[in-house]
Amino acid sequence: MASWATGRWTIPAPDVLERPGTLYVFDVGGRLVHRAEVPAGVSTHSWPLVNASGRPVAPGLYLYRVVLEDGITLSLGRMVVVPPGEP
Image (cartoon, rainbow, N blue to C red; front, top):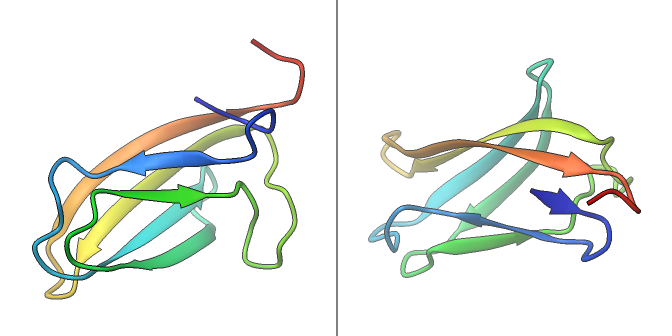
């Protein structure tokens, strides 16, 4: 779960990336809200819960995908962003 109380969420990959990859975060409508290059040797990426325009994302369900540079999907997952004051 992600919360604005911390302002960040760490998206895990199942293993340390042996090759560079790209992280994609989508809203439930399939719109890309965050994209980041993930260098080799990294197993997490901290997302500050903002979209590409720098605005805070809305509470709700988000899907993420980590794709290696050769196009192989390494990780798929989902997360919930909760509004401030929610448990």
